[in-house]
Image (cartoon, rainbow, N blue to C red; front, side, top):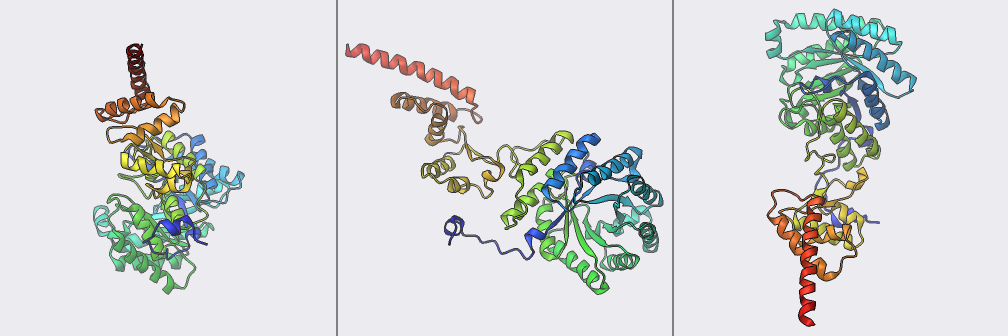
Length: 427
C-alpha cells in the first residue's frame, strides 16, 4: 500500500549504502565541544545531564574529557565514569589522550581511581605541516605513538589511535602509523579531518584507504571519522564517511567545537531518520540535550539553525502560508507539516507556524484571526484584515501578537465609528 510520501513526494535521493540503524556515534561535546573559544565550562552536575541525554538518545559512546589537561578535568572524568557505571548506561567511555607519557599516566590513573575501563583516544599530529612545527620526524612520531599504545594495552585498556590532521597527511605515513598501531593492539583507528579541509571526494578516498589497511591486517579493528566544519561540510563529510565504510562518527551537540565546530550530532540524527533509521526517533531527548548544551555551554542557537532553530517551522511569506493553510483546511495534518518543510515539525512536538510580516498575504492575517479571534463578525473581520495587512507591509519585521492586537483595537474602534455613522444615516 502506498504511503502519502510515495504518492506526493518524488524522492531523488539514493538508498543509503549503509544500515542507518547500525550507525554508531561518539559524542565529543564534553571534549572537543568545550574547546570552542566561546564555550563555557559546565559544572560537573551539568556535564552529567549531557551524559544522561546521550544515554537516552542511544549514542554509542561519550568522550569524557582530557585527563592530561589538569586536576579538575581528571576529577570530572572520574566522576562521570562512576556516574555512567552507577546509572548502568550502555555507553563506551572515552578520554582524549596525547601520545605523551604524562597524559597516558593521567589516563591510567583515571581508570584506576574510577574503577572503569575508559578507552584511550590516543592522538598525534601526522601531517607534514604539523610535524614541521613540532620538529617531529616520522620515526619520533612512531616511537611516542607506539609507546603510548603499549602502555595502555599493558593495563588492559582499549585504544583508539587517532592521526590528527589525517586529511592533510601523506598516504605512506598514515599507512605506516596505522599498521603499527594495529600491530600494537589498537582496537580502533580514527581518521581526523582536524581543520575541516576535506570535501566529500577526499573523505571517501581516505576512508577507503584506511579500510584497505585494516582489511589487509586481518585484525578486528573498527574505523572512526572525526570531522570539522571549517568549510561547512562536516555533516556532508560524515554521511560520506558512512557511505564509504566508516563504523562510527564523532559529533557534538549543536556542532559545538574548535573554530567553526564539528559535525552536529543533532543534525546527524535528523538526517539518519530522514534516511530511514528507526532508532533515531527520540527527538524529545534530542531537544533536551540541545537545550542543556545551549544553556550550560554558552551555545545559543541561531534562529535559522536546522530543525531546532526558532525559524525552522515558521513562515510569514504569503505563498507558503497559503499552502500550509490550504492543507490544514483539507484536514490533512501530514500534508500541512510537509508542504513547505522536508523535516516534519511533528517530530519535535511542534507544528508549522504562520506569522504576519511584510512578506505576508491575506491568508497570514486570516490565520492569525482564526487562531485568536474565532468569533469575530465578518464585516469587522474584513476591516481587521485590511488594517493588519497594511500595517505589516510597512513593518521592517514580523509582527508580534501585541502589535497585531494594537492594530486590531484601532481597527475595531474605526469599525464601530463607521457602523455608528451608517446607522445614524439610516435613521
